[in-house]
Image (cartoon, rainbow, N blue to C red):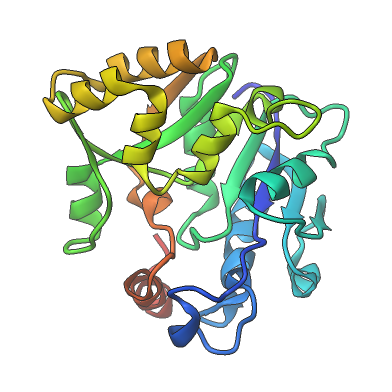
Length: 261
């Protein structure tokens, strides 16, 4: 990227799901302790140290105020991920063009990974960029860890959890209407639901293994009416989102041994 980007961190999910039993007394998933630091704080550390990020908004609970880096502000959560995303984007400063949307549940993220992703986005002139990790890369980095993969002709991929976007195509209509791309944000952890939303041709192409990543990009762009690209990254950590106890245990093991990737 040739210019700094502004970030929105989604940290407004309550800790009442699969992580609740294993994560102590944290009311919010973003505040789950990982080696002495809240999960969301580790993501904020990475963004603050990245050369390509210039501040942002964190949509999350009040306790995160103590962990905000310079240039970041907290926004009170207002609902689901799409509503919170809109709330965060509402704080976007006039200078901010492309926006980096990051979930707070990827605590293995580092500043180098953020800058590498932004660099791989090139000039950033498309509407949306999202990282994907090849299965062999993910399994070499974290043997035995289960992830959801989509099998294509040129390999199997899992999705990452940060997106570079042109905000107006992401948030839908001004009156709060829910466009297809916004629904994809909700369904980022269920790729087959995304595929169904994009049409039967994409589903069939993936099932029979006839489509490669470039073909999926073209079909998705045609269906959504946006210009986008999947960015292949060598950093498996961007795909390790903490949404089940085994993910939490993995991240605690990595961070607890001081082996920050």
